[in-house]
Image (cartoon, rainbow, N blue to C red; front, side, top):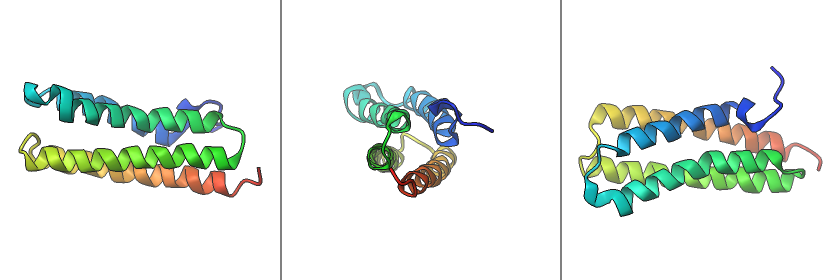
Length: 122
């Protein structure tokens, strides 16, 4: 398959699904979390795909790696916040295990982008 836009990247496809899942999951969080955990988690999730998109459009491998690294940072931020949500009992074990599994998959895909970008000679 030819990759023409950032939307063709598996990291972006799975990342987008992750964003939608985060919005759905946080919809059931307590309302007092709207300006705290809900907002932070949603913003960090959106940041993942936003940084993948921006990295894709960059010309040099250094710039690509910078944005893909920021996507990884945002993903790690989500992992931390999901752990907090689980510990606060906002997520049950099954939902937490599923979303945590998704983060591992996305992490691997972004690492693939980093590896690919860093092997370029630009």
